Image (cartoon, rainbow, N blue to C red; front, side):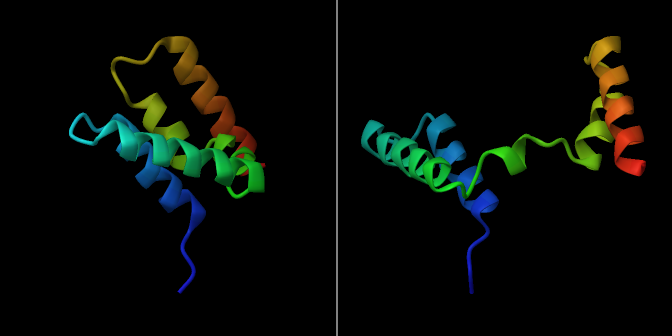
Amino acid sequence: MAKDAAHVARGYKATLNNPNVSQEAKERARQALADMEAKGEIGAAQEKPTRAQGKGTMHQPHMSEDAKQRGNMNLEQMED
């Protein structure tokens, strides 16, 4: 079964942000992410906003009105 690159990348990013992980493990995760980016496995595809992100932005009370408007515009563009 092939691994989904986006899921693998999320795991590495979680490693980087986990205070209970050793510096050595964090460095391996950084290198793995860099390798994935160099191979084109992650990057541009993850930068495109998803429908769920746009809807989530609009419903968060701590988001600015500008961010909510951009989220709404992204949703409208996705529907076209």
